[in-house]
Length: 453
Ligand SMILES: Cc1ncc(COP(=O)(O)O)c(C=O)c1O
Image (cartoon, rainbow, N blue to C red; front, side, top):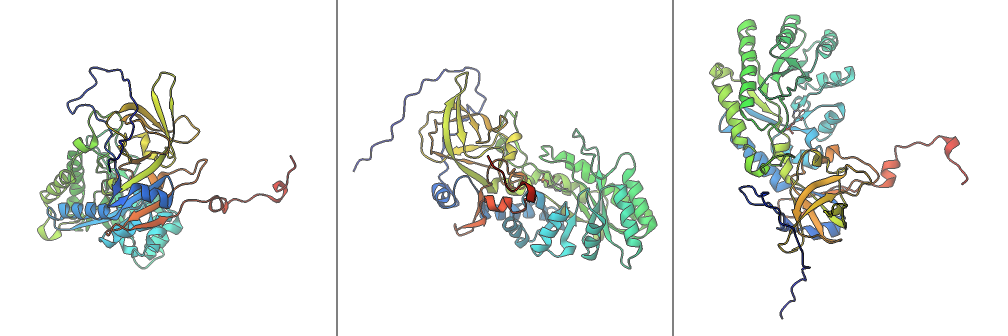
């Protein structure tokens, strides 16, 4: 039997000349109907809209690829999963199953890693805010503590005075890598001697065990050569510590910051066409360390805290079209049921958004808004999409990093999160928020409990 084709309404469009680039004009008409073999529409029917979906397959592939890339270039490599990038337990556990340690920046994250079963000595404790109690817990668990500032260093010295074992520490180093603005608010500066001051104090006072050096030069770094500069400055510190104090540093932690394939707002080209591959970052770091002059038997471990580059493309956010409208200048606008509340990264990326249904090849420049009653709730300022109708669905790509951890509970409930396993089976890994859950921690004083209107 012949099936009748879907009616496509006629569309009159003005032609703007001069807007093409050498790739032609990007349009998003190709539908994304499935993720890892599971129909997007089935997921939305089962778990509600909007919905975050993580692909376990993609997470593992990304990790295994990055590990291979570094391990084929350097003898001693250890990854530590950056919890702040996405601390959903199921996501963390995939990385831990693959062999990744944990990298945390707060007591909350530290306890999450412990509860996930990561041994204390495999939890790297970064961040500027560690109380005495946090530090004592980390010391007890033998975790490497990365010192951020002198006040923390002095507190650690005080705490260590009453102990028999020396706490394991590293210092965070910031530096000029040729990328500006410099990330100099964390750690001790290399160029002005702060880093050496901290190193000399630690080694001379002899109460702490300086086991490593740490840096994290920035995030979404598009210039791999900046990592070569950073690695050479880190190696310089380590080699001179050895010369001056006859002490070998056991690891150099190069932090994270490798870009994912997302497209930064204002970029002329798509991120997928221009972002460096992980091989380029690896080459810059490992060649520098290998050629730095370490004794062959005393090469430091290379620690990596890569976040977004390992998870961004493993996360999807799917949702439903609420309505269409015309703005005052005639532009088409489409309102979706997810916005910046759960897709915080729309503030700096032009996320790829795909329709889910087959809608035809005609596209029109459209602004995609979220459902928040606030003006800044813009998912894409301008995207060329087929005319979506209420009830149609869309999928946002590259949302695996920083969206779940930075999402806002503003005027509505945060969505459920699903992970599709290696056999194409979806698992609910976080339930949709409930009013009861949110109000559980609220208290109303007795005298406010009754009113008459
Ligand atoms: C100390 C530290 N390590 C690792 C990361 C992960 O960074 P990215 O997601 O850019 O790789 C961050 C994030 O800002 C960080 O602050």
